Image (cartoon, rainbow, N blue to C red; front, side, top):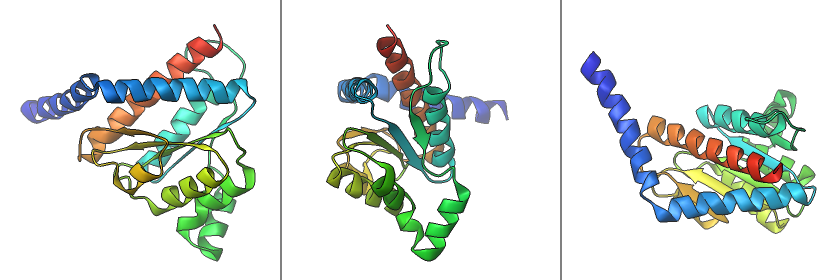
Length: 191
């Protein structure tokens, strides 16, 4: 059992080491920090979306902005789009589950906002449709995916494609990248 646990931890570290060694991914995370700060300074909002565990991660990261991260400071306008279950179930029932994020981003998103979508495969239909609507509205799209980037690769202004095909390792790295973004945005915005 100890060897199995140690192997899982080692696997998680190896994926994060690959992220650390990727100048491209580190540069992209830095650009996401900058575009997020720009959005907040312009009075815009940050929206998050995901499915399953990625929805939980999206909600977690939105809360880091709207609550606090390290600094006791004013709330920043960030929200996870799936938290209204009445809306989510009505749209899924009346239209389709693929429409749950595109419909709301079409209704509340404004030019200059940022939409961050988390999908380990990069092929979540509801996130892809939301990114398509976001682009029409000149909303910045940020994809957090696995290795290939999936279909989100072509609709993301910024793509953090974690170099793995293993869902738990990808999600662990999404939270790491998200926490880095939250920390640096908070530090720079409130400096």
